[in-house]
Image (cartoon, rainbow, N blue to C red; front, side, top):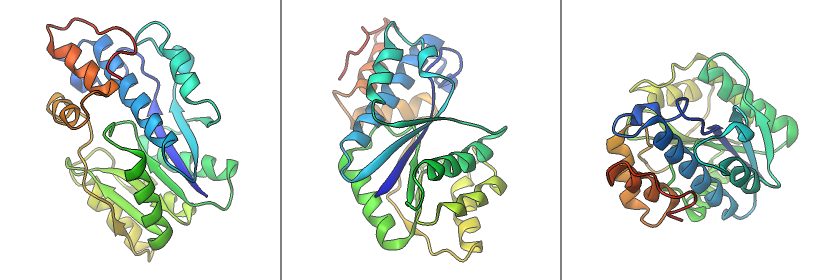
Length: 233
């Protein structure tokens, strides 16, 4: 059974999605982040035959996007392994998240995603897991040059991430090259847009009308008036 590893931050105002500000306020950006994480977790729950793991920076209890969001996230994570992220830089935190997930669930392949692609569905994740089972290594590149998913049949190969510069326009290609340097044949997953800046949020929200994420983006567009907690589901 594949481990589906979600690497995320607790939605605390001023600490998440800061590149959405402006036009979003720090609180609105945290609400968008919370919605993206909840939508992502719902997609994971809709994916058959996977074991969900959340590697979290911060604590769910500290989430302050709106009253009760910590409890909502905790309920969404019920039955998941929730692991604290560790390491100084993002590359180290990613590699350590793989190692910690494998320590909880040894001998299993790991498919890792983030919280920046709320347009994911259970069907798309199931397809990615099937590609991982067939190919042994998969990488889903993002429109901005990064990547939205990395799947490793041998999770120990996540160690190569420590040497890959993260959050650059060529992180996706650098990751691809680092995996190939280990002798791995890498299958490509579909190219997706992740949500880093406001134009990304607008484009992704249009792809998932009726979602939590789209609802919170719409709240920012409508004169900055906050949407009620949980709206836009």
